[in-house]
Length: 410
Image: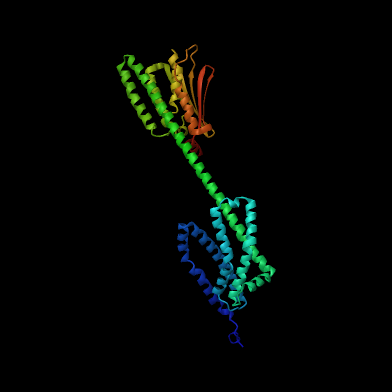
């Protein structure tokens, strides 16, 4: 007698039944975009939909496993019936998950305390767990077309095998602690996002303040430079040499163009800054004549490509002129030496000290301005030190540069 005649399902027909099972999975795909749009508009709907989707996936996996077992045992049971049974048995834990999420929405600080978590767990076991067992037994009675009454259902709850009790206890406990973990993680994530936003706002505010400070310092330096340059032109005018004064005015116009362009940008190359300093020294040479001698060393192509603050070098040279040549009658050399030290650039500006000379009056704006700009732009990574060495006044400027490091790496 063949399998068909004996009424036993043919195993070769199982691919058709498996294809029917996949239909249920594919039928859910058009619903997902609709559920996603709904959950984004309504917070409570998002909680319900996310929980429903999670438990639907669990039920689909469980029903697929049960359906596979039924195929192996050649049981005549449809996948839809198994899926409906799994969904019905998991309604209580679905309700528990939604309820815990809604409770956390209104009392977000409840699950922070370990004592409250334990207290909530005991309340779930005391109040929810018996109701869950009652619901599952009643659902099985309906599924199996058995008489339904409160006493009969409760008796079946009491007669339930210990493994059944343990399984439902595991589902309840897993749901409770899973939702608590998600709520705690979500709260920590929200706090971290708030902290990061506050830190970002604080850094943005500090950056804005530093930029305003740099602009104020640069605005303070530009009139200082113009005053000193005009003072040099005034000295040329008083020398009764119109040609020399006119040449100084022409040089001053190019200096002012650079200062105006530098006021629109914070960073320039050391090549631009050095050229500006050379033009400034050329203007001052009209005033000091042969007494002004300049020596520049270490101005390699890599150094000239290095980035620096605008109007950074000129105040050091101006300081050397005011406190060196202004009080001297003999020729004096202003030396500018560049050197790479690790990932930083060092600039030394030296001038001779005139013995017995009175201090040149001044407000000290130049060096103080340079120090403040270095601190605002580089923090503690840059410095300006001044000292006296063997009859020479030395200003040592150090600051990190990125263009220089890129050039050395190349």
